[in-house]
Length: 165
Image (cartoon, rainbow, N blue to C red):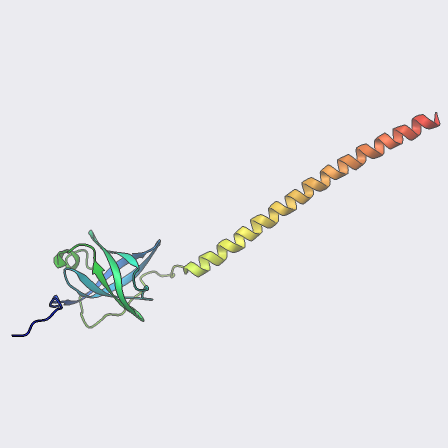
């Protein structure tokens, strides 16, 4: 008899299911390549780093998972709770099921801008608002200085005018 210290690996079912993935605050498309009641192998544009918590959605089926391995466009997750595989397979299939096709497809006509692009746009807008605020303060300070100088010149003019009389 041979004994193993490792639990036997649960059977995986090869599938090709389109899903939505939420990592941090961002959503992106992905594809489940294989699935078991406690884990999945998923393909997406860029695999998240190990330890990332993700939400996997397909129709009404939702699973919370941790990334346990990551390699280029594929990564493996361990699910927080056991799932019924049929919930994911039967939920609103959007493409034909073909286990050999594990490529990620962009569904939008115009791809969503990347987080780096939106961050850069935000920095530009922030700089523009700061510049406008600095100009406003400079104009307000200039107007105040102009009023002070005008009042000073007026009182000097009055003093000179009364001294001459």
